[in-house]
Image 1 (spheres, rainbow, N blue to C red):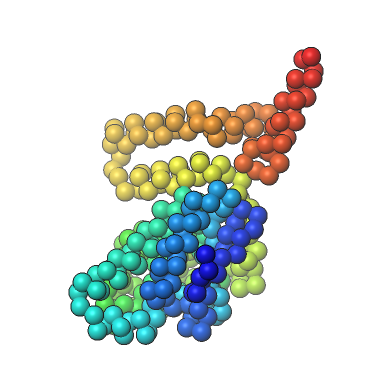
Image 2: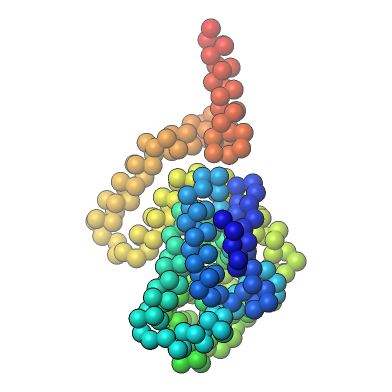
Length: 279
């Protein structure tokens, strides 16, 4: 699929989704929202993609909503605004529920909806010169669609301040709050992202998908006998799965598992060696 506002760059099991509107600091409009939604769905269905990176071309990660798009929304009624907001909400949810690990590569401005994008990712890595802002109330608006992800990432107490003041804050504060998990020099941003990806592609794809679902379930539910039983069912299910069995065999045989490049070949070679020894 050819995109107008984003660019996909794939290789070695990783796809980088570049927000590609540098002339407006990657501010999003209805076209970018639709293209991101389609891209996330396609990447989720692609078995060759093990992890997804979200990044921005040019001087910023994402400066929020495009001004021309906002002008058009101001002229619309409730129904049209609701449909438009629902498209954004669904795109963020699609990113949040992606079965592959997701990494936000943050530099420059991460404002308003841009903060929703990074918060919906599993991991956020920011350059030290990145800047953050939840600017909605200064426009007479509310950060409603991004709120589930931003509040989960930075906590309710911090959200009370930054949602209400709409003040800008530095990357060091974003790191302190847990909004981003790594803070690095701008020149080290790509190397740090690659280091994290190196760890991510070692995990089992099905195990990572199951673990993401586990986090969402445990994180939003109280600790009850039903939840305890659910966690036991989950681990038993994955232990007897094909991937779980392969992972345990690989560990015991001191070899890479099949989902790592060369792992399946090494496993087959070991089996053939054992067969020849027996014959």
